[in-house]
Image (cartoon, rainbow, N blue to C red; front, side, top):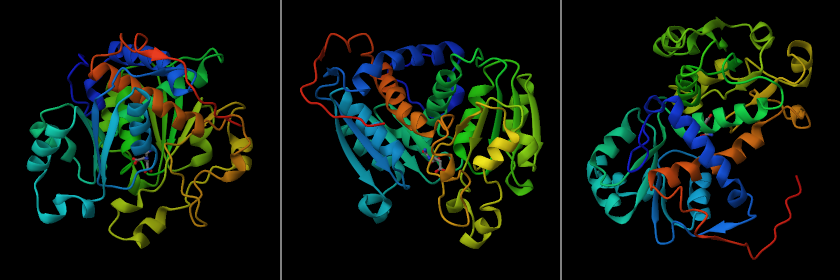
Length: 337
Ligand code: NCD
């Protein structure tokens, strides 16, 4: 895979060499993300950020990543603030926006919409999530997190044992993560979901064709035993016909400290793309896990910044110039935990 000038629309574009290259650039971004150093390598560059669906982490971390590289962000959020609300097509929006930006990140509720937009864009486009389809940058930061969490436990990505739990039908993060895991060997994957929210058959087929052992189950306790990683997900309420329909499944699989202690191996890493649904009837990942050192969810969201910095640096072809444009930071922010 060649990063320079490319769109990032699907995780299927990545091979292992590209993943390794991205991770090593992400490692080099850590001092900048941690504000130990600053760089102006993207001075003058503009990121067009278009989020037509709710987003906190993805939108802000893409924007922060661009700012940390010295670039500016121009942003539109929600259809109501965009000319799409006046009937403008994705084609026209892409032609216009790409005249104002050096690179674009976009999230949209329809599957395939970001690819359609990219086909009309004159600059690279990164998929920040298209409907229930894909979320490639999330899969990359998830895998980067898994690798970091497992380092020091003498476990690697090959031979990984992982449980994905929750809404596997509409959850785009688990679709992209599964496709990415297909690049590795000898995985044991348990897919825990209600029957109606199973992982799409083509994603399961891809995992099996890659030689991985896949168990599909509705039993949380069995699914999360004997794994290195539990990856919990939210019921994707916005993809259901009604809130009531989503309520049927919400709260079905709850991981809390007592379920963890009773079923998981000690030190099983707990992940979630966030947001976790903390409302009464949901709580797929209980707040009583907050003091569990194996809860990696905030390390995972932090990793979004370095991964997105690395994507920008590689796509805009400045990865080898970051250091040259770097200097000390003038401010101090005490980070408490
Ligand atoms: C996810 C998404 O938007 O797909 N969130 C994220 O980007 N971290 C998961 C979700 O919304 O449940």
